Image (cartoon, rainbow, N blue to C red; front, side):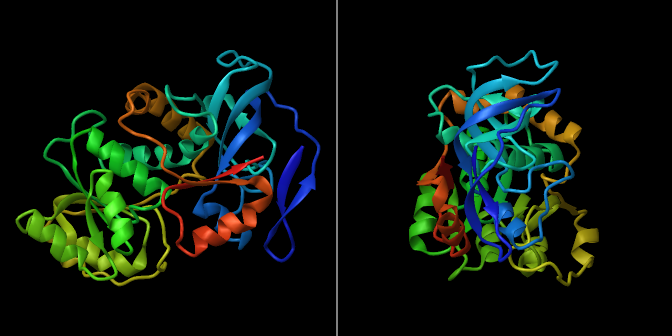
Length: 325
């Protein structure tokens, strides 16, 4: 099979590797597309290693066609069109996935575009519903601030939250990105020229928001606390702007706030499988009905993975970048 492997200097280069055989409980997917995620960039820098036993080349999500079944797999058949959350190895013409981390392609979604769903949907759903306690069906009256609204998780989270009735605020950089986030249903805030704390408190009558989904990290820590409503939840899923911050605990105690930190790749397999099962049961309906769609920034040949990483690092991407083998 063809794959993009990591070089000694932290870049990617094409290589021919043996096509793997699925172990018991796994399927082999002929890849139609692989999603690019910020965790892939971190892996190249040595900060986000694959779990034991996973392929060394990057790629956390793919879509494609099942071409081989491991022992004991009964849910899927050869020829099924699927998308999958991976432990790694998606930047290739073929990829292994655990059968219980595979989902059908939603109605009306192109096979290649479905590669942009597993990581974003699993991340937002496990954190907004699983951690912060939002409803899977009706969030009428709930307010949520999504930082990084122009990213793959952000663009998808805005749509899911709007589909369930929440009022959504989001930060993005520059008027054009803000406008595109607003077109998805959010109240856009330009973090380059506006104070998001002032904006959300003004819009909520000084109450603040019920939930914040944060990819920024340390830089926004104290501001996020100030933007939360009583009993609010701050869920930190990224550290793009720092890992160390100082916080005044007084409002955390006096307003009964909750601060969470989570990651997806390092979760045990059983937890990932449970998240995917929940997506199938309660979240996939929004995609089937067309209320949530994959926002694709571009589709690039697999061999241009380095350029895809450059675009993401430079902040050029709105939505998902996909690599096509």
